[in-house]
Length: 61
Length: 158
Image 1 (tube, rainbow over the protein chains, first blue to last red):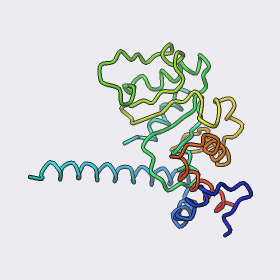
Image 2: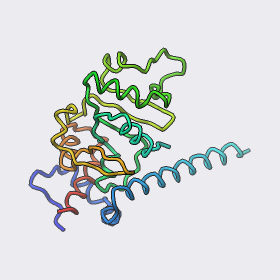
Image 3: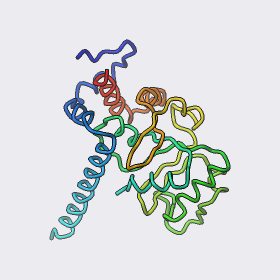
Image 4: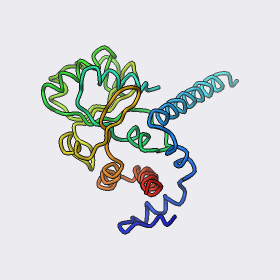
């Protein structure tokens, strides 16, 4: 798909090249509820990673 | 972690007039980015300030990042004296905006919202088109990547 817009900002267009559209397409298949559930699961995972990181750093001699 | 469901539930229970904006609105539209707080633009009418105070009163609202022990009172007067509040609560982080950067007030934004039906709650969410418009108008460097994703979502939807 041609992503150029008539009012396109070249900086935004440059960022757009790195957007993973497969993730967007997968999200667009979900209901809004499912999108939020997924986001909260991701946030829980991020929090668990932070906790594990803190624990690992505190164990470091 | 921010409990989006419980925050939205207490806002709904107290019939607060607000619009979901920011990262949570982006998620509703299909964004794959992680957001850690709930951003809302709230109606500044006196009655709505009372409803907002009641909605969060049981969840220990406090200024995010402020040192503990500051004399912060969660009441209508505090809300009326300020405009935008970044809060931590026992349900997670919530940003209350009287006016959205690049967007406007609750009344100005309301025509550009969609109804979300989420967690068995109905609420208003900024439209994708208006979210893009506001991000562009705000012109903040930190928003460029977000803007790129929102425009990509709009293109995927078209």
